Length: 510
Image (cartoon, rainbow, N blue to C red; front, side):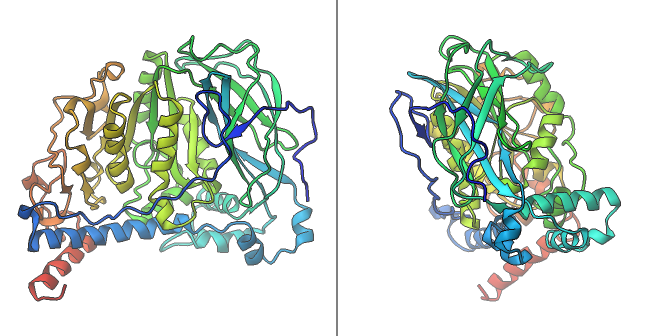
């Protein structure tokens, strides 16, 4: 068992913290707290909503929420460490013989009274040598209605590769050493610049958790780095984990002021269709990753026109499966930092709370920056967390852009709750249909609404079948246009479920 990734020259650093220290005060490392899962059934808040309509509305919403949780449970049930060892029948000597590897996640640094503080986020693991037959059997557990053996060769290979990334054995109590150096400035990436200095070696002050994770801020040697309170450009450093060829990443030194795009990935940057479990799994494990329409063009335009722009990509996918996501993002969209679900957020309840934790962490790390939040309506946590951030941080949330998936994909029949947007200015948010709706907006000055895009926000649950409730149509259509009947508008099984609920109420069954 390797106790150190590498013994090397060490820079001894004053402190490590799980959160930034804005006043240079040391903060003890901590594990993220898992908040309770939100109640996904709408709360009845007025006399007008009481009675059979609100009860049907709540019951149907519960059915859709349950389906969403079923999909999330697949991704929350990834095996970890000892579970993998047991399932694969490996003994300790076999594990000891495997090389140590590191998943190093590109992250951000903030400027404090004591200088730059870089968040290090990595996972140390060992990857068993598995036969193709074993990988096929394991990968089939992530597919619905098909098998790896039935897939075209390229898709079968992708399914095996992602499965191999999942079936790893995390290594606790490991020390990790990073080498930092100036990174070359990539072409056409807005305000990213190469610093004059920054070369240093850092050993992370704490060993990895039992899940193999490290996650905390460490002070940097600031020689040759521009102070974060005297620039709006983002300096980039190359990170290497010593002792392995698998731990390369980029660190983004984000100054105090400027604009940060926090972007979800699934169904806003790539076609996933998480609202259809079979397609969601196929598009994640087997199908090539495909951008959603011309969203790469929108992000490139933002990157080239705003020189203080920082992109931060956030997915609630467990970290074991993020290699393919990072590869897709950095080959398709502007470079930026990355966030994913830590392994100690490992159940369905945590799946629905991790986004809030990660978002709050970014906001608290950069209290002077403006934020543009981008996602789609199929995520219940987004529909809760994004508007709540606008209420909690009214001087920081510049824009909220939400793709209305129910208006653009006939497979999305999940209702969504727009009640959180009540009280926000229309200029601050927009539900949009296609990426071109975002063109020409002055996001730097908070002009986030394209008046030509119809908004039908009712500040309640929307997208329920058959027009249940008041104004329950899509946020971008009239309620009448959104009415769908089973078999006629693509509702299929969902329409049948809704009819079953309706019938149960009619005959006293619920």
